Amino acid sequence: MSTENKNAPKVTDEVDVALVGAGVMSATLGAMIRELEPSWSQMIFERLDGPAQESSSPWNNAGTGHSALCELNYTPEVNGKIEVAKAIGINEKFQVSRQFWSHQVDHGVLADPKEWINPVSHLAFAQGDDQVDYLRRRHEALKDNILFPGMEWVEDDAKFAERLPVMSEGRDFAAEKVAYSGTDIGTDVNFGALTEQFLTAAEASGTEIRYGHEVKNIKKDGGKWKITVKNVHTGDTSVVKAKFVFVGAGGYALDLLRKAGVPEVSGYAGFPVSGLWLRCTNEELINQHDAKVYGKAKVGAPPMSVPHLDTRVIDGKKGLLFGPYGGWTPKFLKEGSYLDLFKSIRLDNLPSYLGVAAQEFALTKYLITEVAKDFEKRLVDLRDYVPSAKAEDWETVVAGQRVQVIKPARA
Image 1: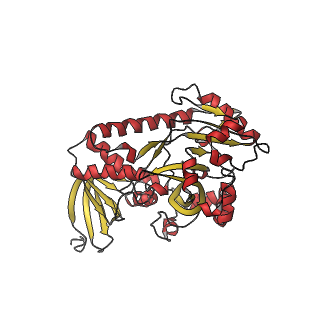
Image 2 (image 1 turned 60 degrees about the vertical axis):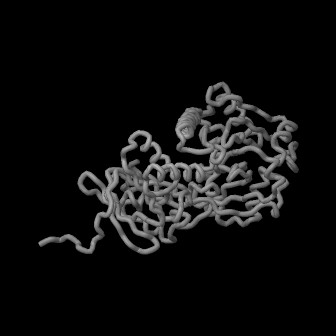
Image 3 (image 1 turned 90 degrees about the horizontal axis):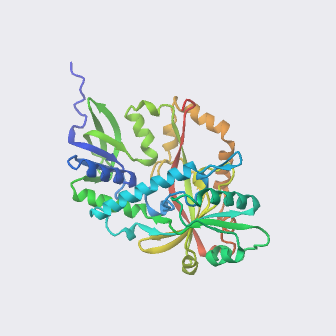
């Protein structure tokens, strides 16, 4: 007797490559595959009605071209020595990204680079004797490396004020020592615009992009994968077969990998952390500041919480933001469900959740403190960077959702 479910949706399409999510990850991988295997067919599924609307959206991230020029968490101090290996590795990887983008521009895949990448200085900022001492030693450790050309060191108050007027107005230089180290070769990247250009080229080359389609399940079927997809507007369900599947679904990736039966994800858990920015609304202030300025994260805070004052270039217009501030919601995506966290808890990853609750008290305390902050308390943090900041010049905007991966004890 056949046990086949006659009501199960039939396979409607078959492709070589299926990409889940229409963000910068899927867009980039799709471009690489078209470069190396142009004959392979591709299909992209996106639950929202357009590309780059979650983490890749320009106001959902800081747009920093991460090359470790100013991000201090890449150069930890270990036993009194500044470790630079991670910073060098990060920089090398970003150079590869730039080479790939340049190649895509040269071959007409990407259009005007000014629409998605612009030069913006990257500066590391230190306050107080201890931080200034650390930053000076970091500067000395990096300045002669070919990947960090033109590194500038400034601790003179007058030079500091000339370069960073917004950060200097109202600052009591006599009360606390400040310094910065950095270079003018940094970049601001609009990952949303970059994604859109990649996907425009993808569609022109034959890739089908199905917006408003959510991948609900992935199952192995012989040497291929069966992908169950739901049209979020009509409720219709279809099945697509693919030889290769890439899950670029952000906070929903872990759940889909579980459904796909990937054994390596057993025991892994996710904890959602949302972000908030203070965005400047005063055009005069925006135009006076021209740099991405990164400081040091507070003790116990996750790396994504490193405070920074950022020049942005979005749709040809300058912007200025400060943050991020930690927030919390049980959603795994900005456009996700309030049940996401609770649905993710399973017997195999429950010990991972309990372990974090017991061992990461500093992180828990940080999140509670951040969530409790109101606008006035966020302004207090901002004034470490912009001492004369006024409430009427800033507004709160919600940034992207980041799911922090919790590794099992064995990992």
